[in-house]
Image (cartoon, rainbow, N blue to C red; front, side):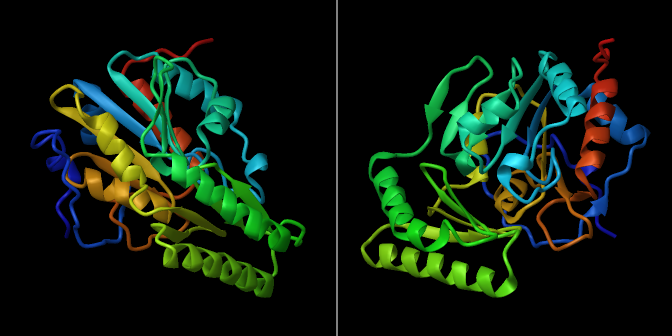
Length: 292
């Protein structure tokens, strides 16, 4: 039986955060017991990183329909008030979209898979060179929009530093055709020397620069945290695997999925409602009072 990650967290320095290419595993169900709650309670500092779609909110047929619940907003606001707890939402969504969905003082945001960062004090930074990239994405959108925009079930989302094709509502044959159009356009860009990749997720395919990952963005914000910080990362999709790999043996990595699958995460929650329960357990363990 795999040794519990609880015996390994906090063992070693927080920097330089090497990327650990550990073998993938079937994650263990996350359990709430005295050991885990004691870990949350006694950590000198907690770094809590959370994906948005499929993690904090259920997946929806379009990005606009995936709205946060009042319970989620309240829990995040309470956790963000704890001075010994850093809360960051890490998403493929644009930074402006995240800030609008979760307007919570003290929250930090990483948008577009790590291209954009807004710190808890409101400082905004771009983490990648953007000039040629924005021109390339605009060109791709101009090429693909006439083909895809008016096809039922397809949504082409311009994220400025990335491009996402959503096909949750499309018929299987339309989905296959649309992905083919996207991949062909990206291959042409690559032949012209543009370092792009296509990542396929849950009913979405995204074009992004090679090396633009949530893991690389987390590496930037983790530097300088207090010694023996406990990092926790929760995500549901392929785009979260780099973050799971980064934090392997440094902290708690939790996959959100209906059924276990091979992943770099150690633990499993089945649904965003289970994530809300986890956030409330964390709140109580840290002694953060619930407002009435």
